[in-house]
Image 1 (cartoon, helix red, strand yellow):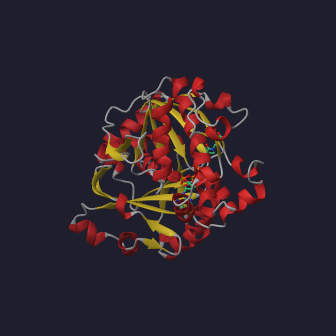
Image 2 (spheres, rainbow, N blue to C red):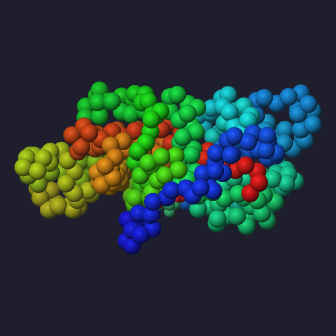
Length: 400
Ligand SMILES: Nc1ncnc2c1ncn2[C@@H]1O[C@H](COP(=O)(O)OP(=O)(O)OP(=O)(O)O)[C@@H](O)[C@H]1O
Ligand SMILES: CC(C)(CO)[C@@H](O)C(=O)NCCC(=O)O
């Protein structure tokens, strides 16, 4: 956690009159916003992954099609016909949203991601597709919108319209939840692993909720209304920490590999549990025997087995699982304390750390339910890592 970030973190953000007025106008003044030239992109350039949302208009008239310049048509074709771009770009086709309204148009939203460290290659690809010849502006958010602004201008002649990452996150959630009826879900029966299953959740009355964004690092926001939120706190121990530690400990190279290893591992070969210390539950304070008492510490205890022998019995899978459990439990614990402090009982977990990661989602669901005696609920959203990109795409009206 940032040691002295409290002043900044606890600052309540209530949008000023001007800003509120602007966001309302963006939605209502359709004619004016039509002026924004295509293509319409929203980019969230994070510490690990860059998320790109592309709006493909589906209501193109014959006249429009005839007058559309070739470069624009080729970009649209290239993005929508492929699901892989270069070696590291992916389109998440399962997340595609069809027939959605955007600034008076109707079309399809496409969700694309690539590692931020590949930004140089992305810019080269964009240039090769003719982006540099279009005088256009791309909406961008995340730290990289600031870090890479000059590169975009120099390499591809693109101007970035920059938006705050948390403003974007919240408007993105609002928009996607409105247009995708199956966006929000929870894990039913989280305390019984065999019965634990994904169930749809009606999030049409969302406020207030606690938003836990698990990216490279973690930010926790208390959201009271569409334009009213504060950043409660954050922690540097997030998705990036999981991936970094897992690669160091197991020699794996990708997030997918790390998750696959974790799925086949057993953290109790690595962690010390309450029962390893108490011989059973610590009843007085409600600590069950199978609770992790101390992460990673089973491998350095001097008991029946010396520590070197114990370490040699630990597999890569066990190490990956223990890393995942450690990071997830820590985030769950901080989130729960924030929810208590803010008197909020619905905690929405998002961010790409949860991508293809049901183990962490179920653990978070369990932790929220168990430690709150069923009063708090963990919620999840299908477009987990894309809300920032969607939010900034919505916010730009073509006049910045
Ligand atoms: N294909 C992937 N490659 C790398 N990390 C991945 C991948 N899929 C999921 N992840 C996880 O998602 C995390 C990044 O999540 P996300 O994209 O939400 O954050 P970010 O925007 O890059 O970070 P921040 O918001 O802190 O700048 C990684 O740290 C990793 O744990
Ligand atoms: C720096 C950001 C906001 C970038 O998205 C994120 O990585 C984060 O919230 N990190 C945790 C920083 C903290 O310790 O509060």
